[in-house]
Image 1 (cartoon, helix red, strand yellow):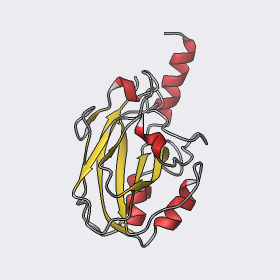
Image 2 (cartoon, one colour):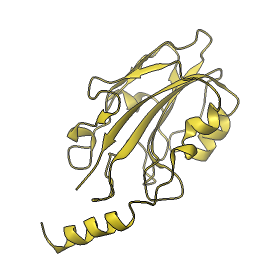
Image 3 (cartoon, helix red, strand yellow):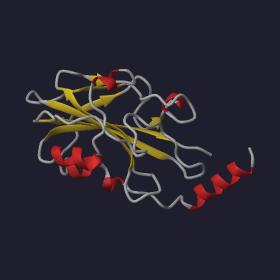
Image 4 (cartoon, one colour):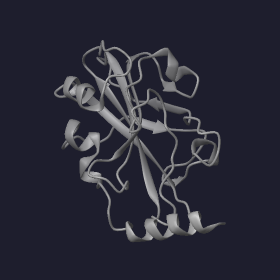
Length: 185
């Protein structure tokens, strides 16, 4: 490792206490007081375990396959949001935003994410952006949140987080999440 890596790690250590915070996750605003009842799982990683290298910037950066069950009967559409509240920023870093998923769909992955509109991620790009926490910043938690809505979201691809959340407000029937972790030394 060269000097650039050492400087990056030192910066990560300096910023270790700077984090957006879990209180700013989408679920905290959209589903406040709601117990998560949608069961979210992945064949790529277990709950509260490390993401596979393939889902990170250190690998191919593919979105992990997600599957869910226990969606309410009257669901009209689903939304997947992945956020990192440990990012050294004012807001959690948005890794993934997929909306307009039909209620009868029980999962999404790197391929099927293109079947529905994706919003802008934290890099201002459409689609999944892989885990890439600053070296030395400690463990980051990636919250893959699934929301069941009583409305169909008819939005174009490339919409921004705030616009999607605004349309979701007051329409969440149920939600659930799967948390994965990742860190760089």
